[in-house]
Length: 262
Image (cartoon, rainbow, N blue to C red):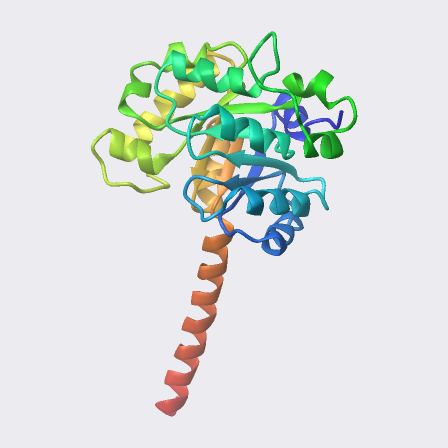
């Protein structure tokens, strides 16, 4: 079976740079995959991506050696199994709040006897190889999102779940969970920042990979230095809108100066 490159990165104590895909298009996914990311995550929760889109996007990512992952929209076994069958090598599951939910998530990703994933990998065989079924349990990464008030009360029980590889922090929902406005890249001393550091400490204690979503590369680098090993920077939609906005703004500024005779 094709090896999961992220597992090697993590085992060496290094950090992986993850890109985020919200645009339901195979060409934009291929463009993103050609930019040097270690992994790309298809966002099936808050993006406008459905399953047929995801399949084509996974095919586009496969033109490179970037590791394909997906964030499902809920802890629902059918969706988890189906996107794994399509060739995703990692799952980020939102709103995992307690040990039972964590166990159900992990078991949906694993073939028996460790889990209850149904066998029928379809494209997984094409991407992973003919021996996919024998090694998928070891290669597929499983990240539980810590972003609810209940989860904060159950950190150790969630993180000690057998088979769980890591946790992933969504700062926006985490902010809401502790009564703050949803936002990202919180400064030191902020209530959300302190909570993030608490989650990171628990992840280290339980020997789990810690991941976090960031808006800026500089902040992601700071999180790596703190101990996060999976950092997401922005998204395809944000890069496109941000780049376009900057170009238009510069053009309008030039035209304004010309009209004033500068």
